[in-house]
Length: 451
Image (cartoon, rainbow, N blue to C red; front, side, top):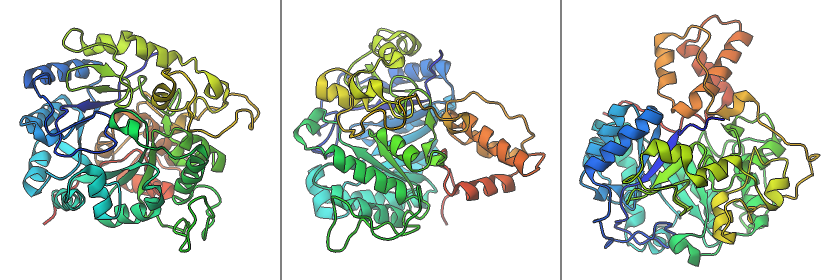
């Protein structure tokens, strides 16, 4: 079976202007840059990645990537290879000039960190006064340049009660996507406290329902986080078109399936909802290749071995692809829809094939037979259009990250045939998007700059 690289997260530096309590990389302002891959080494690695997949979704992050003087040149080099390039940043250094430079050098969007709706709480977690305001100013700069952005909130026991308010804030700021990153206790995050499996069930169910999945029941939902104001009510349309995703919590897919097996939010890769080591990997500042930023298990170093060889032959990748999972994950009928977080298993047990301790589900409640997603809900499909696509519609398809194109082609053309359409037009795409409500394949869509 072929496992294609669709996304690469590249920690370009361990240097950072913040000192965040949860940082998996243990990044610091004084981190030594001597061991970082040079500009020329980064260019060589990009060329090697392009030979594996010229349409990779490339996340340039850190530390703080804006601390690298060559960040714009590297972004442009990725663009020139045909990559979809996005930036992962805390936002503090991102102003109008930086946003314009990012756009001019081919960056299509950015991810910004906000861990609280209360500035002082966010600043304390990030160890810099003004960090919250800096991130909010960055959203304004990105909007002015027509660049989409997502917001990342790292969920721990101290801020979990702010999830509903963060949905409101992200929507009001104009974010396209809100990613809730659930704690994997690595790096400085080892000192933090995770939420309980029961809390995971409550939160993930809420994140599904607030996006209209399930019975669509509006009104209060009682939860372990109940308060006098009941912020965990699920008013219809609260998400307001905002795509909400649970990261490092693949059992979100199991909950989505339990609520609605046909939900478009279920769309994901085959072979488990976590793509680490199968369709996604991380590059460290020094050139080590690991399955995920939260798993410090290296397949090898890019200064000694090419990317293609590490991707195809790395032992940790082979283990994750064969996926002989242990414990409840190995016995679970949702092991291909979910599969558990391999990084959390490694952080908890020292074994990346062990069960995910954050999941409360007991296997067998749906008969025990392996459950799979249909093709139209599966990322990574190699599918060419069979209907004529008008030029503008095809351009929109080509703007979608490569991992999602096959799924989109299948869904759009199935809709077209059912509606009796002989070709795919921009108007048809608008119909499909309206029917889906939100399109999980489009986290970033370039727009014209404001003004």
